[in-house]
Image (cartoon, rainbow, N blue to C red; front, side, top):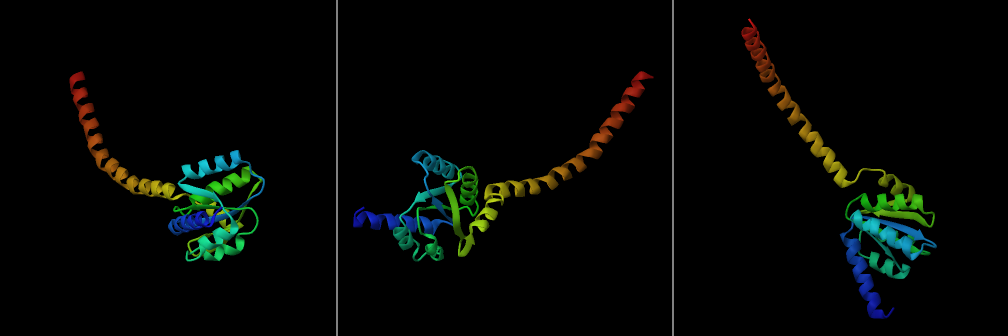
Length: 172
């Protein structure tokens, strides 16, 4: 890589990290191109990203971000998973690491809060932002439907009584 390309790579990674809420640092020893591509595809589907990085360039890109404390984790064959959603990247990486022993979670950070590997795995078990929104909407809609059912129940019962009374008169 030439100097200008390195500067552009650092600037792009710095911008990406600045826009992210969660960063997960992984070691990906022996992963094939096909495995890395499959992981990237899963990350994209979840609204996250995955980038194999050069340690020196990644450390420079971390400078000035809330993830600056992660620079000690960049040793060996590292890659970075990142997302704006506080859970998405952790979910995909933890799931993939369980299926493929070549990917190991080293640590990460949620904003300024540093996480070890177990912290990232615990974060991965939480529901995603979209799941939480769905649950919240469901909780808000449930009382409204129950109120409508309660209000409609007496009218429905009254209609059945009139119908039964009307049919008994016709039978007599």
